Image (cartoon, rainbow, N blue to C red; front, side, top):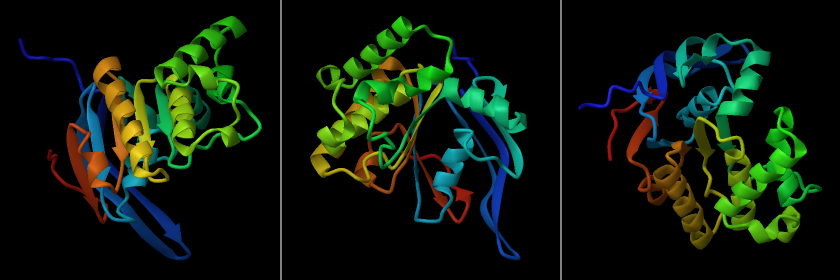
Length: 231
């Protein structure tokens, strides 16, 4: 029997522009596409093509001018800022290029941060954090500070932080852009494993063809226009 489950992400007629002085600069133009649950999608394109803007819209960090984004059955484009912040804290795990770890906090404390917005008890938070750090292979680095970790290890902490709330989608903006090739391969293998073994839907912006090869589907953005899916 065919799978009738609706896509985890449904984007319709999405447009976004920015104002620069008296000029209006279009960034995304009338984009519509779906992302199936459990997909690993790579977004590629030159600098300024709109791929990071699209990722930020999907993550609820930015808002569209027109169009709609439905994620996990929830219409995020009509949410208030407060509702969007709550939704984002529960449903989006964001992996940044430069990790965005807080230097004065340990790996454990950095991963715990998103859970402080939930109603979990301290004991429950501890269990979630320890599980997330085990998943990324850093159970023995919980009390280390970012400066005591390699770049690859710092990105693993960032991935654990993204995972700790068991989000609906994982969004990654150039997750290997600040890493050497060996560390980059390790991080890509980890993201691939989270997709295959944990069933996480991954949306990754990258300029690196090697990174994009890990994805099931590759889409290109060029001057705000989205290409058809390829592999």
